[in-house]
Amino acid sequence: MGEVVEVNMSPVTKKGREAETPSMTRSPLPDSVPKTPKSPFASRFMSTPLASPMKKAIISMQGYLEEVGHFTKLDPQDAWLPITESRNGNAYYSAFHTLCSGIGVQALVLPLAFKTLGWTWGITCLSLAFIWQMYTLWLLIQLHESDSGKRYSRYLRLSMEAFGEKLGKLLALFPTMYLSGGTCVTLIMIGGGTMKIFFQILCGEACKVCPLSTVEWYVVFTCCAVVLAQLPNLNSIVGVSLIGAVTAISYCTIIWVVSISKTRPMAVSYDPQPQDTKFNVGRLFNIFNALGIIAFAFRGHNLVLEIQGTMPSSAKHPSRVPMWKGVKYAYVIIAMCLFPIAIGGYWAYGNLIPNGGMLSALQRYHGDDTSKFLLGLTSLIVVINSLSSFQIYAMPVFDNLEARYTSNRNKPCPWWLRSGFRAFFGCLAFFIAVALPFLPSLAGLIGGIALPITLAYPCFMWMLIKKPQKYGGIWFLNWALGVMGVVLSGLVLSGAIWGIVTIGIEIHFFKP
Picture 1 (cartoon, helix red, strand yellow):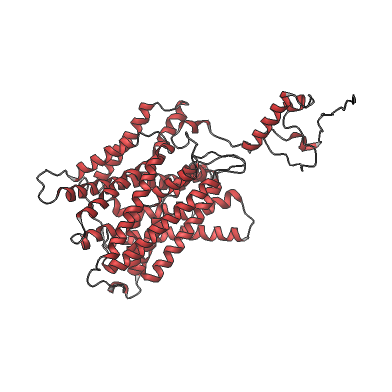
Picture 2: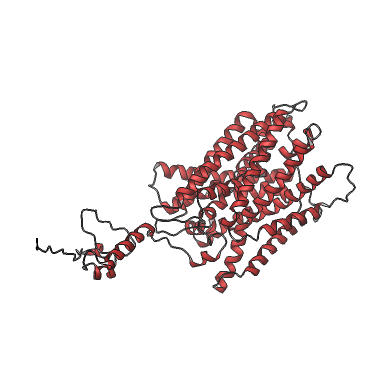
């Protein structure tokens, strides 16, 4: 009864590199072998009695470090920047942001691709592009966290890690900034122009109120966008992204449902146009343009890493799990919007689809037999969606502006300067929208330059960072998709240049 059992708590030491295992890393030894203490601090106090509070604290701390500790390396500057200063995102946030950035007015021009490709090739190309971009999306989500624990919360930083600092900037800086800034300029044009249409529908023909000019409506839209842009970071606009997602789904659904429910215009045809009956250079470049329309419909890859950067991450709960979960549900909904509007729009209008896409077709062919309430509601929804999309696409620009300040001053941006940056960007986007009203006509040209961001670069970055087995299945798949993405980008560029040369664009400055 009085026997005392001595418990030997002296640590077992190992020779060689195993004894030098750094703290906060998992030991490579099997569970059956006694483990080397994780730190010198632990080895000094592990010989204390079993019930020692110090030992319990050390064990608790080791467990915590095992949970968070594959050394998630965070740049201290990230805590000051709008994309990464809040890291409480989840799968719902991922879905809302992805929906808001993944559905836009570019979906309304998808029937134009079917006009050139026809039923079979149109559906086939749209399906293949959807699968392709889903795969590259998965690659980016997996590449967000490296094996060393470093997180790449911006597309540009991942590109610099994969291709090198100079080449990475050269390949990714202009396309990502164009997709952000150029989209915001386009949203001002679309939002301001749709505001004007909404006012005309609401006021009616007998209205005696003096209407605003197009430029004045641009000012109204820009002011609303800048006020909404004062929300501090990417997580704070999750409600805005939810509204943007709902409105995008709504106007896409309304437009294709109304289009297929109304009587089709006379002389609707699905046969190739006369100039397309013979295989010539013009028809070839029209096909390239159609492929560009389909590829450019799947935008938003330049925001994937930024959205994932707003999530917490640990060894047991990596951010890629909730991110991919949210993206999967989001793209199911995106597919339910894009495929019906492409197929239904082409069925309703065939070769009569105007160059402005489904919104123009709805107003041209069904403006008289559709209720003013429905037309006005559609216009209002487009305006709200444009305001919401402006926020998420402008956030990388805000982040870049503040990053330059914080890196030079080594302190966070004060609130007044942050507000000034955002007002400055809004004014700059407004100026470009007014000065270059023909910019949307160059969308195919610039879209061809930005297309590798979605379809090619993720494949090459996976090869350079993950280094899969040479000549294996994954190796061949990524090389093939990467090369095809670059080739497709060149074809889209050539098609856009051909269209500009043969058809021409009406260049008029400061006359929107």
